[in-house]
Every structure is written in C-alpha cells, then in structure tokens.
Image 1 (cartoon, one colour):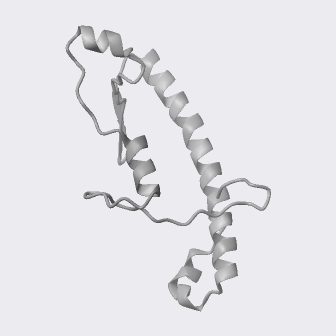
Image 2: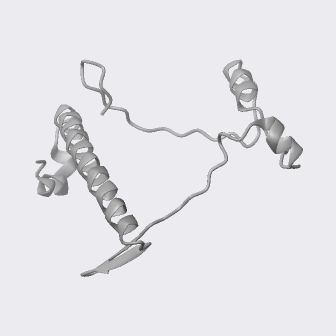
Length: 122
C-alpha cells in the first residue's frame, strides 16, 4: 500500500519514484475496482431478490440505477421511428487534423499513461 503521507512532499520525490508509485497505485486501484464490482453484483442480486431498488445502511444510501442505452439499435429501426439526426463525422475530422487543417472548436486532452514493461497499462 502506498504511504499517502509521502505525497505531502511530492516535489521532493524523484520522477522515477513517482512513476513507480503511480504503477503501484494503479495495481491497488484495479484490486479495489475488482472487489467493488464483485460486491456490487452481490448487492444487486440481494436487492433484486428482496424486490427493492435501494436500501439505507448506516451512513450510506444504496440505490439501483437503471440506465437505458440505445447503442445496439439498428439505424434502419431508428430511421423508421424518426429518430435519426445529422452528427459530426469525427473520423474525417481526425484525418483532417492529422493533415494540419485548423479546426475551430477542437480541444486536446493530455494525460499521463503509465504501463508495465510487459505492456500492461497503469
């Protein structure tokens, strides 16, 4: 486990140490996410058996969230329902951007990606 008190003096930590700590935190994060996913699946199963969509426990409130997605709806079905609209072609914009064309409204996201030497992302 990373000692978070070390982060108080983050400017004093070497770049290599920061990268290693970033990798270790990524590993811990994955373990926590996996544990949380298993726990959430069990909670959902139990709430479903109880025919409940939520529960208050201690200082926490747990609710079942249902999101409707339409990503697998065929375009012809959407067209028949009058649910088609014109959208920006991002692939074409990316190609134009790669050629150096100035595109008004373009934004760039920059972030750090740390990987294990074996190729596993951090």
